[in-house]
Image 1 (cartoon, one colour):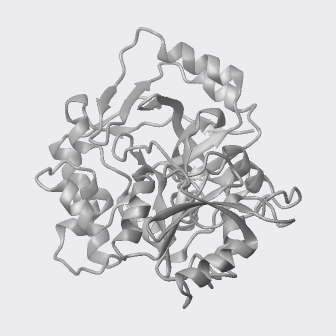
Image 2: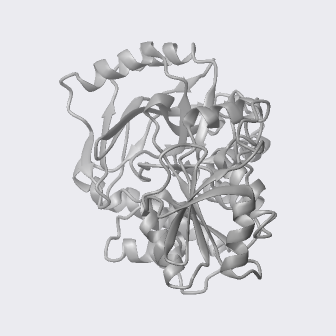
Length: 413
């Protein structure tokens, strides 16, 4: 079963929501965050990336950064001002990006279920990133970042969501962000039917936000230790999430670029690739159209690749080995380019599919990379299979788009 909980969201007034809403903290660096928030004191980046209000060169993990985050949140509460719901509520959150539409339930989820693996993971987390968000949550006594969850489609939940969004009630928010994505949020007047329906959902899965979820678990452990009257009903036992059905999820490819050819000439490299892959020239510059195909750019030319022989991605007993990202790693990046660990090797970089394959060609043509690889997107069912096997996806296997905005709903703990 999946427990979801209504909560008393702290949120901006409708007239200020476009000023407050910001990109997730982890998709921008300090320079980008400072630029996006420039001239806008209500931008939520002042809360999630508070170093933008401190001198250049400030240590991102210093005490003053977390203290500044708390100051900035209080300023937003007072000056925006933020509102707090009178009663615990659930919300529906719709994202529209071009023709793609997905609608999820914004709720709090159980840290216990996360700890017991009833909320499944597919990614390793880094201690330094966990440390950062744990300190941020404890300092603010708030969860300001949303965990992006999914579940296998349930028709009963579909019907409830459709009924609520087609009702006459006006949304709390309805705006289009600078990237062209439309964000619409409704508050539900009667959350109980959805709460009951989710209890019939066997498992939830983290799509994006592993570090936020892990940090919520660590925050709960720390606050429970400090609370001799702990009951299990405190808000810190829950974390903020938006939960989308798997059939509505959109995954874009996470492409790769490599800085050099590992000491090989272009001819030597192509010969080595040709021993393992069938190659065609003048491949479609938009990238492969199906799984089991890869497009490679170098020397001002796109090549189509298909793996030769038995080493295909048909490893039915190993859902990780079957992934296109794994096949590329095991048959080209490691043996030919010498990249043994994509997590740590500085010669490889990752380019989210939202930036398009033209970005891959630009990086190679400019000399910033020697070769680029365009992949077919990982399927959501593959992610669920890997999670069900308690396995770990290779780094940068999925790029979910569109993304949620920070600052619309805050969970106070």
